[in-house]
Image 1 (cartoon, rainbow, N blue to C red):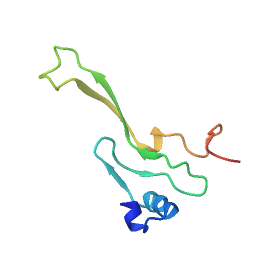
Image 2 (tube, one colour):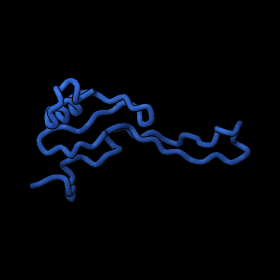
Image 3 (cartoon, rainbow, N blue to C red):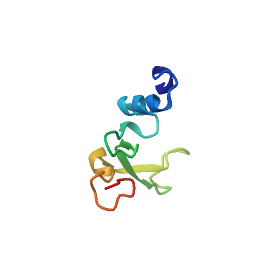
Length: 89
């Protein structure tokens, strides 16, 4: 989608990807981190799962239970954090 809207320019395609919210079937909604020193990280809520015991499972595909959801603002280290190799100071 980004390349189509950006008319096939690589830099324009990346800018378009960073400008559009993402709806990923596995990770849910989020965005590609953009801005001056951005690293292009996909920022989204993160889920913590545990494997169910055989007694807890109600079928062949019922194997995990959700323990917690970490909001996107807590799930990823901020760009301003010291020690991030992607940030050039």
